[in-house]
Image (cartoon, rainbow, N blue to C red; front, side):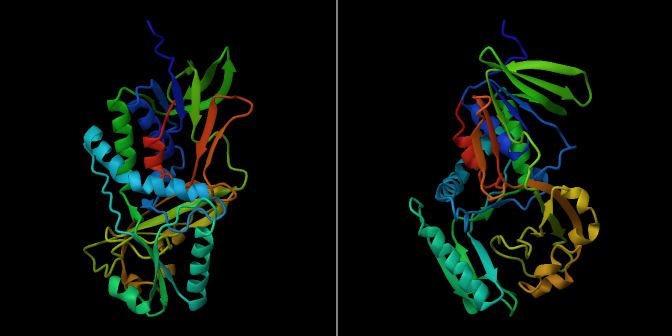
Length: 348
């Protein structure tokens, strides 16, 4: 009889990155354990804007852009699988995305940045449009007069991030995955070609389990600091919220048609401990009211925040440990965007 505490793969971290990888592996017939620290973690998975965003990513690392594009194109496939496995509609929409600019110089730099991005060897270029104020106003009624123009690409979109996290966990369980909530992994070591993970349950005794291979969504605190993802804000759709973007924007700006807008700042090593004042979150729509002036009169009825881990160069990390071959680190600040790539390309 197989040891119930022995698995083919252990995934440490039950957020969007870990859950997507675990879901993809278990769908492929791999025996997987998902160790999840729980709500005491500063989950970006529960405090983000839900963007599936391609535009502008990958300057300095062409494969990141290609990987992002692949994931965006495969997102409809993932959404369909989650609907079938978990009976949850993650509300995927991919109408394209806008990047509004408030000066001619800003628009010029934006176009130059995208041009440099597409000039990189090996990068799969995608079409983008440069819109002046009139063209942007035609697509976004109520756009502010201070917006001189912007860029638009067709691959961008968004999902309901909370439903996505729930669907990944439900799909993982349906395919026989073992979920270990409220479990903090404290030590990883190899022994006889296998891995031994020491994990402490926050509500029960210490346990020891073995796995031949291990994935981790985050195994150390970031040296370069973190970005405080969001604070995001939800406007009251029934309280005269005014115009909303018909498609998402990566700018910390207007709410989309669901009433969600966002703000963000670099939090540094102190993380959220340095930014616990509610004022910043409560004013999440204010700093970008120039994009859509009606935001000045919006009533905020809920706010939330989370800690988003980001590497120094902003690129994701998918790396095998040199000290512990067979153990991998998978972390990124694009957990929503790359969820399809993580889930549909997961292999043991």
